Structure formats: structure tokens, C-alpha cells
Length: 411
Image 1: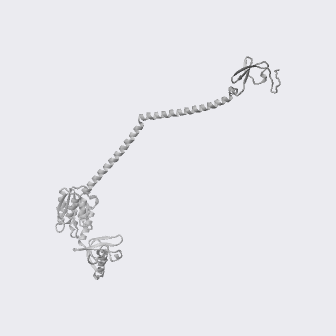
Image 2: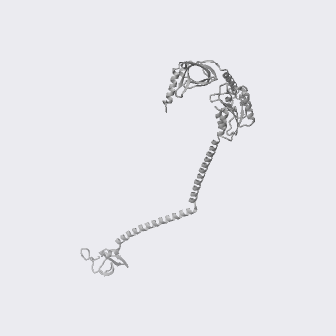
Image 3: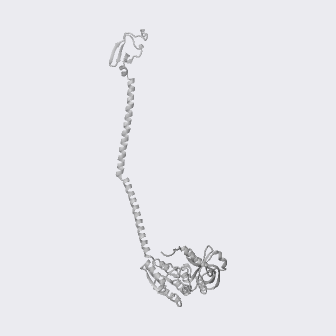
């Protein structure tokens, strides 16, 4: 690669330096018509000056507002004093205004303002008279020149968005002598043709080029039209009487085509999304129904008589086991208690005592037997019965003595 390579910043700075060194561009008076005037919230004023040959961008910063003694509006003829320089960030040049004075009001702009005020007072701009644009128009009428960028843009966008929509073009004269009559005729003929919506417009231009759309008969034709009208006159910054009267204003003919012609691709996409949404909703309904059915099935199984019988059988088995265990526990406790009683009885049983070497003595007294517990119950030669562990011994008392061995005799 031959030669030096510069950055965009370096080139813009070099050009700006050239403008700065030019004495004439640092102190210059420029005459023209105000266009695209915007008062920014920061206090700066952005506008353009235009004449029949071209346009130049202008800006008056808030610090220079002392050089302006009136409020600028569209169409004013003014003389601007300032300097021309380059805005490095955008790579564009513009006029930096220091003083602005009027150079006479624009005649066409005065006519525009007067007609706008008159029609507005008559209610022709009122929103309640605006007709809605049909969302699925199949016949779209177009009133514009048969040649030029406007009709080509409308046709291209319409073909891209929906090739099934029919465009009906009325090749109107949109500029010069007879333009307003041609536009009115086109509106009425397309209305009679029964189109669903109508686009009335043209490409951008000066206020003189667009003047046909500022004529009262064009405004009344749009207002009286039973078909919804979309105005598409000029570029975004150009506004005409037709824009105020129309049912909908589009900034450009391309935008008007997008508003009038529904996009079949978006429609198909919406259909697919709707179908998908319906399928998802159906799946959710089926899933809820399945869950409800499973719930009913589980409930039915729970309430089935067979289940109840099985539960009762299981309960009986458990009760039987519980009774058996309880019985066994009671029998075991009774056996244990019985063993204790047996041991106690063994300890108290006379037979047990006899087995330990003791004996039991009885006597007969008055025809009955009684145990001998004292020597006072025995007399000499009294018959006694002595019980030992393995039998009974019959004996006769030969002698009775007390503990000291002294013979005892009943007195």
C-alpha cells in the first residue's frame, strides 16, 4: 500500500483546520428559508437554511441566543451571520449562527399557516373524524406519480410484505400546474373502485414542490373520502395540510406502504405461534385431566370394597395377634403368681413340716378330734393319734410332764 494512511479523526481535524483558516467562512452571512427548526431542551436551536438549490445545516448554541430577537418557525426567510466549520464527530459541516434576523416572511408559508388555522378551526384535523386503518387490506390504492422513487418504494415494500395484496395506482400529477386537480381526481376514482385503504403522497422536495398537498381542495377531498387515507408526503421533516387531514400520517412513502400492507410473514408466524400456544394449552389440559383421572383412580382403589375387606382382615389378624400376646402375657403372669403361691403353700403346708421331721398330734374329745398343743390337753392313759410323714401312729399317754420334767396332772 503506497502513501500514508490516516485515521478518520485525523482527516476530519485537517478539514476543520482548513475551514478555520478560511477568513470568509469565519464571518459569513447566509440567506435562506428556515426548515426543520427544533428548539432543544438544552437551549440550543437546530435548523436548516434552504433555497431552490440546496440546504445547509445550522445550529445556534444557547450562549449565542442573544443574537436572536424572535422565535424562529418553519418557512421564515432569514439572514444568518456566523461561521462555517466541521463537526468532527459526524464528519459534516454546518453553519454556527451568532446572529439571526428576519428577511421577510415566506409567502407560501404564510398561506400554509392561514389555511392550516382555518381548517383546524373547522374541525377537519379532529381525531374523532379519523378512520381506522384496516389491519388486513387486500386492495390498496395509491395516488402518486407513476415515475419516481415513491411509487417504486411502495411497490417493493408491498411485494416484500405481502405479494397477495393488490395495488391500484392512479398516476397523478403531484407538482406544478394542475397537480391539485389531478390528486383530487385520483382520490375520488380510487374511492369509487372500492379499495380498502388509500396512500396519497410523493417524495420529498421544497415547499413549492409539495404545495399541491397544501391546497384546500386536496384537504377536503381527503376529509370527505369514505376510504381511510394514509398521507405520505415528503420526508420525515416535511409536513403538509394533507398530513393533518389524513386518517394517518406516514413520514415517507415507504413507511406508508408498511402501514397499509400487512406482513404475511408476520401473519404466518402469528398463526404458528397461536397453533403452538393452542397445542401447549391442550397439552396442559390433557396433563391436568390425566392427573385428575389418576387421582380418581387412586381414590376408587382406596374406596373399593375389596380394599376395605382386606383392611378389616388385616385388622382382625392384628387384633388376634394382640389378643394372643395379651393372653400369653396374662397366662405367664398367672403361672408366675401360682408358682409364688405354691412356694408359699409349701412353706405353710403341714406335710412339708412333717417331711422335715416334725409330727402332728391329735386327741379325741367329745367325739371330735383336735390338735394337741399343750400338756393341759392330755391326761394319763389318753389315746393319741400321731401323724408323721409316712403315716399315723396310735399311742397312749403313759405320763405327762412339763418342761422341767415334773409330772403334771390335771386337778
